[in-house]
Amino acid sequence: MAKPVLYYCPRTRAETAMWMSEELGGVCDIKIVNLKTGDHKKPEFLKINPMGKVPALTHDGVTVTESAAICVYLADAFADKGFAPALNDPKRGAYYRWTFYAPSCIEPMMLDKLGGVKRENSMAAGYGSEEDVLKSLDVALSAGPYILGDNVTAADIVMGSLLNFATMFGAIEKKGKIADYIDRMTARPAYAKMQEISAKYAADLGYE
Image (tube, rainbow, N blue to C red; front, top):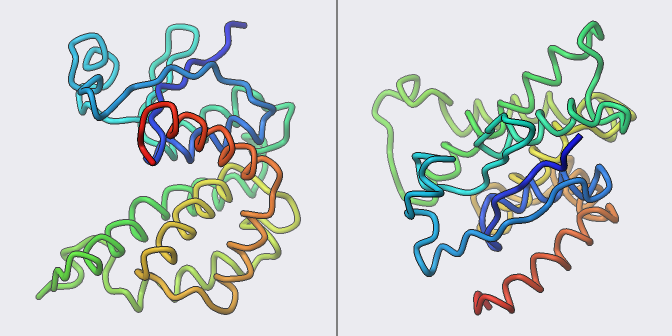
């Protein structure tokens, strides 16, 4: 099986996908897409992702975009690593639920809050309200040390990455279960490895 190719730029959402790759043992080849020089808008990359965004992943003729989708894809492609419940595992539903809850509800709420956007009709926003998001997040973090209980999965990489970002910029307060969960996730060796690789690429490209 050919190695997946991860189209990546440091200091972007692509770091979530790289973190997933490192959890699996560094399974991806990295192809740099330099946003500063406009690589993401060049025709060759737009054929891969017409949105002109990173991350993107190509693997055995398959193209996947969006960080959460890439994490789920990689977890299934390397199922022997144990980062996804089996298709017939009852936990698969919760796995999908919370993996996609992060970008579908937490991220829009975070961006609205940081941008000072006020929704007259909160339900029209999709995520409801900040209170709704935090209540649901409390449920997500109540199963155990990780989203599905005792074992870390791709859902945790997606959730941990986003919550770390959200608390870093003050969109969500880092306290209680949220703080414990973030600290637990960012203490993982694969997170440290991702940070090390990202720092090197950032320095090489002048992103510091």
